[in-house]
Image 1 (tube, rainbow, N blue to C red):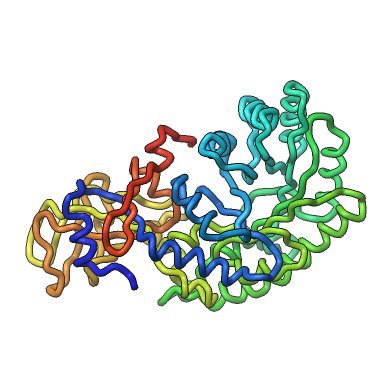
Image 2 (image 1 turned 180 degrees about the vertical axis):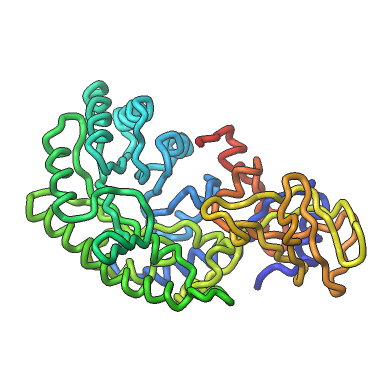
Length: 403
């Protein structure tokens, strides 16, 4: 059962606020739900670490996920290096690095025996990794990043993310041939992230576009599966060994895990269930439950029906809008003021009569995205059975700030 407001008040009574906490019971249930969704469909699960950013919780998810969970998806080489120091292996940097220093760091990790793979989508990135690999006397494993956007009317309508220029089997074959001919690198697989399926909320109340979004998601599932299969078939027919074929995200776990071309699926937000993932039509998305929260302290009561908290301006990346703001969670019925929203140093709230807030009361919020809020806190409080059972450093608490 989710923690009640009274239980949270009791658990945080001796803690300084603002505080970040994770309900471990809910976290574990979410891991179990991921296992249930992917099940014995075939692929393994790679954790997208950017959506967690707490090594202890990444480790917990790996342990609870058992043999189904293998490897981590990192967002930069520095993060992979940190996680290697924390004892993790099988690391895949899914966002192509370009700085020469990053390529050198990647080659150094490979030279030290770290199981590391790097995403590439252009000749320039391959060349830098090739030079670094040669300098360190290793072959850096590379993974081709394939565009999985939905393109309509030629390319006049583009639905998805603007990332890789590799959009066809021919594009992938050309880049794979370049990789095969270069010293210092070796082709290890391919990835393709269908953002317009995995991250597009299609059931938001009052959204006039939700029917169109559902159509986009349905169409994309078929297009992505066909495109991925064509690329895999083309590369394997050319003699390339694809040990890794990665796809998916939290919102597309159900469909991508059933794609026969895929060897692994990725997810990370599933474990925290931030509020950007509240309104999806997928059954597994409604079964996930929030597990990561932050609590602010009421420090002002400016008038009847109002309360102002200290801090709170933890706004998510992505399109600018109210959906990127943190969501008041407990007590129920609170709302942000449209003219101020979540502020740099204080966050005013509209308070219903049923919520008895006073000076010093905690107010619980949910962030819009997964691990981003961890950049604002040095540690996360771990709560189980309504009590604090531990503390774990975030990346920030470990002294890490990547970009």
